[in-house]
Length: 241
Length: 247
Image (cartoon, rainbow over all chains, first blue to last red; front, top):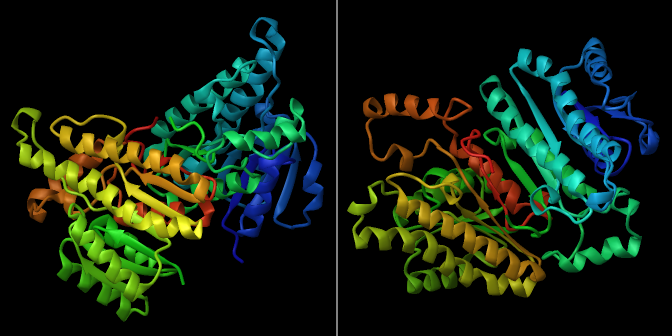
């Protein structure tokens, strides 16, 4: 299969990022997987997968990852920003370090990643960027103001960048998952509690990472060629606003 | 082979969607212009697809009932529906006649009600189905000189969200597609190429992407929403709109 180009994925070692990497490889993309450590990526044996160990708070490292892929002779077709963290903290106990850490990883990391790929996409006159927000950006979350703020910021970043790049062939969209079956919600909830959230979802199940990967695939593909600046809410019908 | 029924399927976005879906599904084209629907279905059949056509007015319950009965007999079960029939009238609020208001609301809102009501029982029985309605950017924002259209399109999305919630337990997904300016006969509104060219350029200039969308670009979104690729997406509206609005 001829390559559809390279897609840079941050937070690719687990959860939605990992499953997106798997799906993109199966669909004929090359994947530049970025994360602190390879994690589950070591399960994948593919010449089309390249791993770069980096922290998304390091803009220079992200730029180096992109230029490395270009030096290997591959065009940057897409960017998928999955890297993110969540902790639960009551508002008055929320310290500056925790607040900054969420904004730095979830929002500034997206900003750095977009800046890293944009020059290549601009010069190609083509590219698709998918950022991950969350249902919580709209709904808010008890003990999650810092996370909600960071994910709300992602929406504003994506819309503005979409407007700025709309005439350059670069599309920027967002996927906002509801509760998804990944390690992330298990940081503050048991398996049982995570699955129990299905009762509040109209489709009566929590999301699977593959659901999110399918949305990413759509937004990267030409099927969404007139879709930009949009927020695709993959939430099983929860939070319809 | 699964079957999709498309209303307003003889032209514009409906026809582009019929052409795309015909690659993987049996297609039933419904249009108030039965002759054009038949013509479209014949063209699809000639290229090897399985296509049926019926003339019906989506505002008329008896016509929808008769069409559904005939379709069930001839084309079999319906697995997916694209409620797309629509009309466009631009006029300032104080000049909208009651007749035009009713035409707008009936075609869009009652049309979606009658068509979805007709197909949902069989989808519930199979505990599977996908419905897409045609909203608009104006489902979300208002439109000067287009109050009746915006009201109708907002109502469609509101209806669609309620259907999504009510039928999610049956495994049925309901979403809207909300196009921006798409180069269709509706947008062109009968203008000659000479009249249309400068208007097209001006309209395109107002879109952040700098161009109008093509019906095929809307069809691709509808295809996504009708397919299993969107199996966890319901009650949503996706806007192929070149970033005309974001929300």
